[in-house]
Length: 245
Image (cartoon, rainbow, N blue to C red; front, side):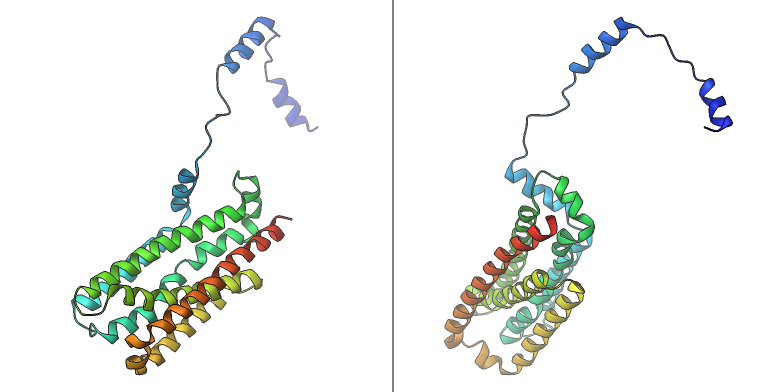
C-alpha cells in the first residue's frame, strides 16, 4: 500500500458500532419493496418494442408513405398499371427499412443483454417481425385504398400486387439473416435492389403481369412465399439458440 493511500485512509473517521442503529437500518430497509410482483403482460412487452426501434426507421417509413401519396396526388404516374407496378417496386424498399432493426437483435454485442433480460431472443425477434409486419401492412393498405379510390382497380388486387413482392423480400432477407454470418446488411440491400430491378423490368409487360386473368398466379405465388417465410421465421429459433449457447 502506498504512503499517500495510507494517509488518506487515516483521515477517515469510522463511527463506533451502534447495535440500535443497525437494527433500525434493517427495519427501514424491509419497508422498501425491491422486487415487484407485477409482471409485464404480452401487450406491454409488444408496445415497449416500439421504443427500441430507431427513430430513423419511423421517419423513413413516413417518408416512403408520403412519397407514394405525392406521386398519386401530383399525377406524376398514371393511376392504372403505373401506380400498381410502382407499389410492386417500392414494397421491397419498405421492408429494407426494417432490416437493421431486425438484425440488431442477433448482433453478438447484444447477446449478453438479451440473456440478462426476462424475455428470450426468439420472442423479441418474433414480436419485432410482427410489429413491422403490421405497420407495413397499414402503409401498403392505406396506399392501396387511396389508389383504388381514384381508379377502377380493386383494392384487394392492389394489396396482393404489393404484398407479394414485400413478402418475397422478407423471405430473402430472413434467409440471409439465418445463414449468413457477415455482411448481412449489404446482402439484404443487394437482394432488395435486385428485386426492385426485376419488377422494374416486368413493368414493360404490365398488361400481362397485372392483368385480372393472372391474379390466380399472384395468389398462388403469395401462398408459397408465405409458407417459405413462416419456415424461415421458424428457422430463426435455431439461430437464436446458437447465439445463446
